[in-house]
Length: 222
Ligand code: G3P
Image 1 (cartoon, rainbow, N blue to C red):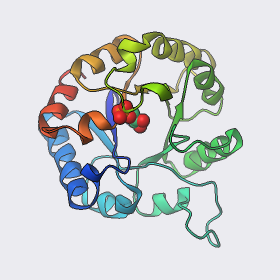
Image 2 (image 1 turned 180 degrees about the vertical axis):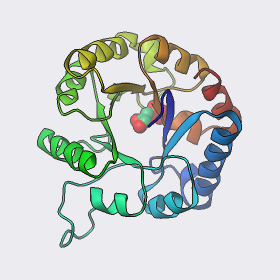
Image 3 (image 1 turned 60 degrees about the vertical axis):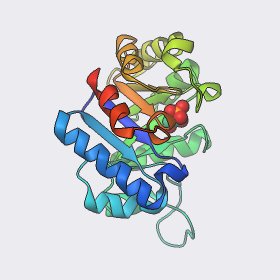
Image 4 (image 1 turned 90 degrees about the vertical axis):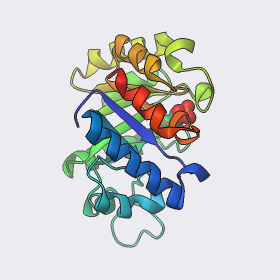
């Protein structure tokens, strides 16, 4: 996965559901092509197969289950998302936390399938702990800032820089993203200055009146 990267988690917002989701995903692809920026998206789980067939930008699942392939009703396995051509998955997002052992196993399963793993963490301590599992990315997001108006890069810059330090100490190849409240190019610039290799964001793009303008601003500081 090329970096620096803007990764957009579409969550389950109405502004990224159904046709609106298709429009936003197409817009992300258009802007990636126009600007050469690395943009990845994590569509709503119901859109994963559609988007991974139709789009060239990296498509991530928002969550995968540590479940066996076969008799696991209602689960989404790493093998499932590999089969439909996804690039990888978020793991342990703040809104879908899982046990540490499941994080470890899912990172391993992703590695075996050449899927990119993005493990979400809440702070620098957890970033270090999960870096030990050697995911491709750690994405640190203080839960209390998620969905808010103040970016982690302004409200808690030390969470980003400390995560980078802790992660690099135990696993120098693991890349760090940051998220929560990220809204504009200035936030991206600060994230990179703090040592991150990109951002993971949702509401800043999904809920924007002018999604194109926000995306162009975000990629302008990569
Ligand atoms: O996964 C990204 C996310 O949790 C951050 O959300 O809305 O603060 O950009 P938001």
